[in-house]
Image (cartoon, rainbow, N blue to C red):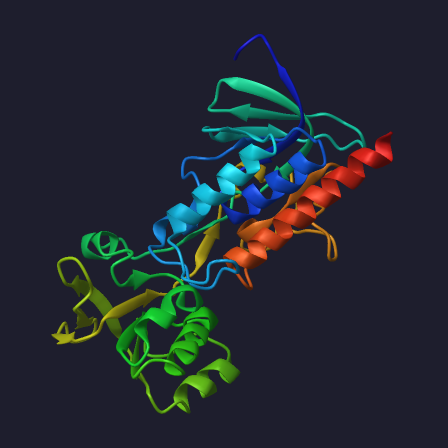
Amino acid sequence: MSDTIERIKCLIIGSGPAGYTAAIYASRADLKPVMYTGMQMGGQLTTTTEVDNFPGYPNGTDGTAMMEDLKNQAERFGTEVRFGLATAVNFSDEVGGIHKITIDGTKEIEAETVIITTGATAKYLGLESEERLKGGGVSACATCDGFFYRKQDVIVVGAGDTAAEEATYLANICNKVTMLVRKDHMRASKAMVHRVNTTKNIEVLYNSELDEVLGDNVVEGVRVVNNQTQNKHEIAVTGVFIAIGHTPNTDIFKGQLDMDDTGYLVTKGKSTKTNKPGVFAAGDVQDHEYRQAVTAAGTGCMAALDAERYLGSLE
């Protein structure tokens, strides 16, 4: 551990739309924010090839370019963006207390306020072909990427409410949606199962798993295996949507911050306040409902305003 401890007025942990928006607002409020980006600079959106639903891009953009735009805007107002990973935290319980954060296991930082925007990571099946074709037809977000598969045939993998919601959303714009359900029943709510079963262009294949995504540079189909008979068959599709959940990136905050049963940070009311004074959370790390870039950006703005008001109340 280094001997010199840096003191920061506003520390932002994580990048992405929430982090960069928080940085823009915090910079303009003269909070002199320092951001540690995490290992994936720009967050999940950098794995998305095309972004058509973020306001201000009439011709669309790609995720990496959009994150670079947001980063440049934050830096223009004075944010110091650093590549590094928060590895430990010790948050104060006292109003006006100083929070201690360790970066990369070696550098200790003290912060008057902390904005957490570490996001959530989509769960995937772990297939080599799935990884290779991310951005080429494999996606974990139907509302983000479904538009690109209008009037085409797609696959949804999953059996819970998220999978059912993604399937019914896609059914409105796609020619046919095939759901792969690993067991002999769906674990979604009865209402969602009913919605799936009454949507004419959704077919549910039970006891079925994704064996392989087919295609060289883009998805051309899938190979499906029946886990009861071990019979395999191929289905021609252009899109594969993995809907088996997300994991919030909150491990280092366990025992420090309040979380729900699935690990998402709990914020108070309509604010971004956590249970620790001066610690705020924005974006997917505290939102398992919407998980959109624009909603993440909105909560990033809120977090910066909450941090500014908190510091103002101490003066």
